[in-house]
Image 1: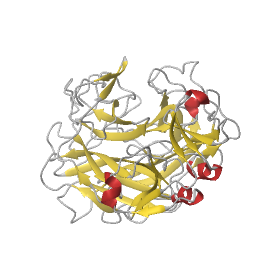
Image 2: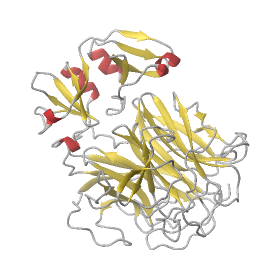
Image 3: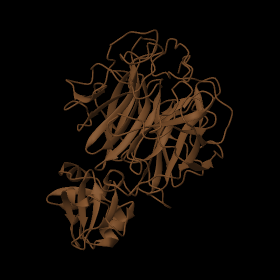
Length: 493
C-alpha cells in the first residue's frame, strides 16, 4: 500500500498529499519514556485551575510485538481492542496476499491475555473491487451492543484520488463474519478544501446512554486546522447514522439533516485518534499521538463544555494512532482491584516502520490511581447498591435495573456497594430481574434475560446465579427479538 507523508502534531507542520486510506499524522517516534501525568500539550495553553490532576502509576512497557498478520503482512496499524466474553479481541489494518483485491484488509485475532503474543491475524474485511470501499478497508473501530458487533472503518475505491476516503459500516454476530452496508455512512463535508486531500475516515465509536457516538477525521471540516487535523463528533441512536443524527457544535449537540453537515467544532487537534467513556471519571477520554511524548489522553465532560482533568501521557515510541483497550461498548474497562478508584489505560499502537508502513503493534499502559468514582450518580454507571425494599439496584444509562439476588448483581455490576449513593431515588426503574427469570440463548449469541418480552444480554454466570431456565433458540430468532439493554459489557461477559 502506498504510504503518504504525514503531518506532525504538537508543533504542527504542513500536511502533504495523502493517498487512499493513508495516515495523516506525525511519524517521528520519540525516545522511550516512562508513562506519566502532564499538565497540557505544548501546543495548548497552561492547564486551567478547574482541571483536576490525575495521579498515575503502574506503567506497563511492551515485552515485544503483541499482534500481527505474520511474515506475509507488510504493515500492521490502526488497532481497535476490546475485552469481550472473557477474551481480548483486536482488529487492525494490514494486507495479506491472495485476499480480495490488493489493498488494505481488516485483520482480527484474540487471546486470553494482553501479556503474551496473539496468534497471527486473519482477514475478515477487504476490498472486493467495486463500491466506495472496493480497494481499501482500514482503520477499524468495533463495539458490541445487544449481541451485535458494529465495525466502522475507512473505505476507499482506489489509490491516488483526492478525497476518496469515506466511512463505512459492517455488522456481525460473531466479530468475524461481516455484512457491510453498500454505501458510506459519512462522507467529506466539503466545508473547506485544503492541501491535505485525505477526506474523511479514521472513525472511533462508542455507545453511551442509548447513543452511538462517532468521532472521526475530516480534512475538509470547517474547524480543522491548516494541516487538516481535527476530530469531529456525530451521534445517533441509529448505528447506521441514517436517522436522528446530531452534530457536536460550539453550542452543543444540534439536530442535523444527515452526516454530511458542517463540522464546526473539533474535540482534538489530531489525526487517527481513539476514545472511550470512563464511568469512574464521568468523562470522555481521547487518545492521540504527540511527537516527543507518546499517546496523550485528554478528557472532556459529557456535554463537551470543559476539560475536567489534566492530560495523561502514555509515553514511548509510536508510528501511528493508538487503539485503547476498551469494554465491548467502548467504555473504559473496570479495574478488577478497585473499579471505583482505578482506571486502567492500555493502548496498542504501531511502533516501527520497515519501509512498507507502520507495523510492530505493541501494548503500553498506565493506571489512573485517584479516580473518585461510585460516589455520585454521574460516576456510578454499572455500580450496584442496596435499595430500600431490600433488593439490589444497578445504575444503567441514567436508570435503574432492580435485581432480586445480590449474587446475580455481583455477576453483572462492576462493583456492589454496601450503601446507596445520594439521589438514587431520583432514577426510574427500567427493569426487574427476579429469581428464576427465564433466559434465552443461541449458538453464537450471548445469554439474555427475557424481561417483558425483551432480551437483556448478560453473562452465563448471571443466568446460573439466578437459577433461570434457559430456552435455546437460533441466532436468527435471537436477533429478531426486541432488545431491552445490554448488561453484558460491564464485566466483559
